[in-house]
Image 1 (spheres, rainbow, N blue to C red):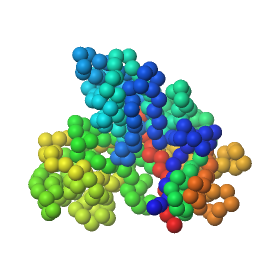
Image 2: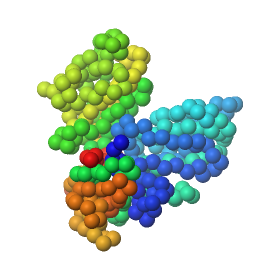
Image 3: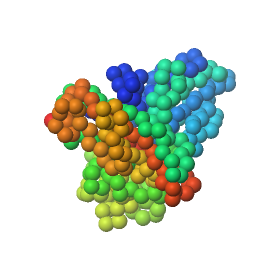
Image 4: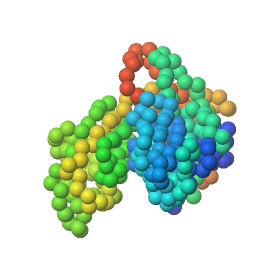
Length: 342
C-alpha cells in the first residue's frame, strides 16, 4: 500500500466530520445518497446549495454557492435520481448519486475545501469567498493525517494554480487536468483562458481511439490516446510538444471513450491567486510565521517531513490579498499535499 495524506479541521481531526476535501449534508429530506471525489483536478473551493424540483417525474436541480464562480446560479439542470447513477457537473470534481424519491423542495449542501458540521454550518477554510485587498482571512488550524498504511516522508503542503475546464461534454473527454507531476514545473501554469479542440480522430494501436489536441489553434499533443490512464505533460515523451509547452505546469489525461470530440470545444481557465495562499507551522497551538511557500509537515517527535501511518502534523492556513491587487475574476488555487511512501 502507500502513505495517504488528507486534511481535516484540527478541532475535529479524529472524525471524518472534519474532512476538508469533500463533505455533504442533506438539509431537507435526503436527496443525496452518496458523494465521491472524482479526482479530476478541476476544483472550486466553495459551498454549494442544491434545491430539487420534480415536474412530472423529471427532476431538476438549482445550484448556488457563495463565491462568484461558474457554478453559481445554475438552474434547471436535469439530473438522474435513481439511487445508482453518478451525476457529474453539478459540483466540480464531485460525483453525486441522488435518491429515487427526490422531490420538489428537497435540499442539500456540499462543501469543497471548507468544514461543515452535521447541521450544514460552514467553517471557511479554502473557500475564501470575497476578500478585500490588503486584508487577511482569519487563519484556520488544520491537521494533515496519514490515513495510509505506510510512513510518509518528505511530506509537504503547497498552493498551486487552480484550473477550471468547461464546455459541453468536458467530462466525456477529459478525465484529469491537474498540476504537473514534477515539483520543478507544477507552479508554471499562468493565468489564462485557453481553447481546447481536437483533430485527426482515429483508431490507434491496441484499438484505442486517438486525436491531436490543439490549444488556441496550435497543436499541443500528437495522437493523444483516449484510454483513461496515459498522462500527457512536458517531458512525458509520448506526443506532448515540449517545444511550445502549451499546457505549461499542467498534465492532462483523456477519458477511455469512443465518442468523437472533433466537433467539441472546451474552455480551460487557469486561475490566478494561488500565490496569495499562506501557510504557517503550528507552534504549540498558535501559528508560526505565515508565508506563501511550500510548508514541510512533520509529526511531533519524528524526523523532518515524516508522518507515520495514522500520524498527524498540524499547520495553519489563510489568504492574504496584497494592497496592489485589483478587482478581477475569481481567484482559485489547488491545495496539494504530497509525501514519499517508505
